[in-house]
Every structure is written in structure tokens, then in C-alpha cells.
Image (cartoon, rainbow, N blue to C red; front, side):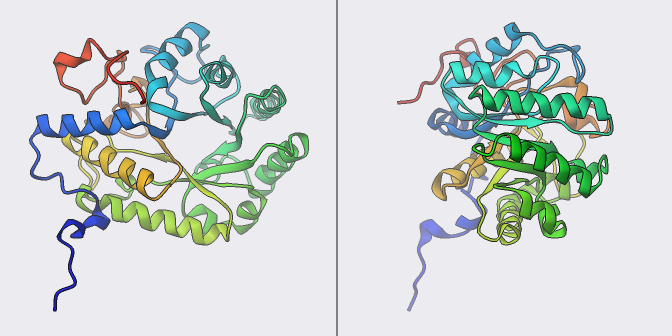
Length: 311
């Protein structure tokens, strides 16, 4: 006797989109985008800018206007060089904020980042505080140095949930850091582990499960995941227009159906990222570097600022 349900075949791998034409994929993308995301990583840098450049409120507001219909949360990465305006402006638009202090090997910058994060939180602009991003992965600080910063932030703003962002596996390997977190902030990229698009959702679910096990009851948030639309591939992971749409659709459907808090990476393409990440670094956005939505038919792009609205 069969107990199968045809509509559930391969459902763990996401929706079967292989039979869709490019136009059909664009239609599905539009429907999922219209429904809205839990969170979106905010890309502030315009063409010709890179980290260290002064970010203006004008460019932040322009880009916030574009993305505000589609996301409930935004994630920012720094509290200096104008980035501190991102959570303030997000709050004006009614968007919740996961605010990061960018920590690295420069002690003076670290001090300013931590002070900026604390001030923003005291001003009511921070819903979740992220102390550092992939610092252990890069090796910029020791565990003890990072833990000192986390302790400083927790003591200064105990009412604000605090965590640290890194690759999902770091939370299994560094239990002291995991213990210091109120929330576990895990980056999950099947692409960067060479996983083919076909199995990428299953792979991400396993990444999330590993972080959840390490968290030992604490909330786990996926702080970054995404798929590039152009560039050279990595083993079985191939960037393409169609693969980027499929990954977005499958990840967002999983986030919605299983109530997974997920921040998609990223909002806008940023050319400065070509380098350490290879040529794919510049093509992770849902919007291109000129702020045009990438995955909607060209005839609709002129309407990008008002194409969809919640409700």
C-alpha cells in the first residue's frame, strides 16, 4: 500500500523549478518578493565606494525607500563612517534592525565601533546587537578579545539581545563564544562550500541544524545566505541568473513555512567586493549596482520603486 503524497516529493529540496522558463522563474520571483522577507542585508556602498568611504544619509534613504516594501528587518555591518545612520533611518521606516559592530585588527576602530553600537542601542535604534562579523573565521581577534567586547556590550545594554556573527560551524567549535551569545547569528552559504543548486536547500537546512544543536536552546538566526547571479563557479556551485532566482525562492519559502529568521544577502550588488571573493563577489544583490531589480522582466523595471506592496 502506498503512503506517498505526490505534492511532497523532493519537498525537502525545495520547489521543483527545473521545468520553468526564465520568464516563468521571473514570475515566481516576483510573487515571492511581493510576499516579503524576514530580513535583508543592507548594502550601502554606491559604485566607486568601499568600506572606509563616508556613507551619506541621502544614499541610505534612497536605498531604504527601494527595499522597504519587501522586508521586516535589515542588517547593518558597521557603526562608523556614516553606517550608524542606517538603523536610525530604518526605524523611521518602521523596519527592525540587527546592527553590527565591525571588529578587526585595528584597536582604535574597534573601540569606535563598540561605542557606536552601544549609543545606537541606548537611542532605541537596535533590536539585536551583533558584536563582530566572522572575526574568528578571519583570525583578526583571539577568542578572549572577542569575549571581552561581547561582555562590554552586554554590560552596557543588557536589555538588547546580543550575539556574534560567524559561519555556522564556528558555534560548535567555540562553545565559550556560543555561551556568551543571547542569540546565535549564523552565516549559512551552501555556495561557498561548493554545493550544487539542486541540493543547496537541503545543505542549508543541515547547516542550520548544526548551529541549532550548538546553540543548545538559544534562538538561531541565519544572518546571511544567498547565491550569486554571475561569476566563476566553485566546484558544483554555479552562479547564474536562473540559479540565483531558484535559491532565493526556495530559501524564502523555507523561511516562511518553517518560521526561520533569515537575512538574505544581499540587497544591492557592490562592485568593490570583487577581489578576495573572486568575480562573484560583485553579484549577490537582488538589485544591481544601479539599483534596478535584477530578476523582474525588463518591462517592469521602470516600476521598481512601486511594483509591489504588502497587503
